[in-house]
Image (cartoon, rainbow, N blue to C red; front, top):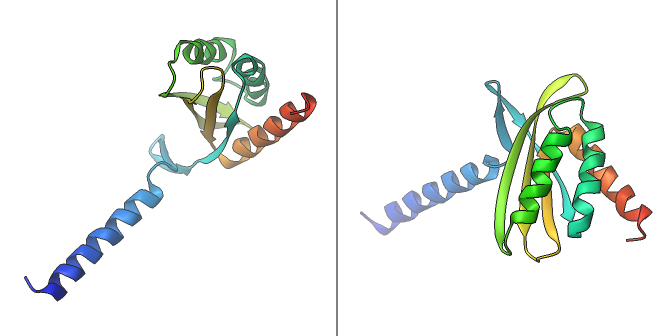
Length: 139
């Protein structure tokens, strides 16, 4: 193979890789259809995870109640530093079925990072709740 041929092949592989990476984690399969997910998230003090999840639960019609909230709180409490875990919940938001994916990274023993991936409208509502939650606490 000539140098020109190798460059064209490598360029094609790079383009295909970039294309695949760009759409990977932002798309979820929900009942056979593609749904773009949006992220909302922040770093919490460990003792604030439960009260914040209570606020998230109030935004959701079904699929993320006390049982689901408690399972996430217990999961976070059991994690070790530098550990990552993800939980998914099939929820109902504004009369529509949706996915709520929570990704937790414990980069500090007392401060997990929590990212919520869901439909854009709910992600925006969660972002607003995050701002209000920290404003109320002077943070």
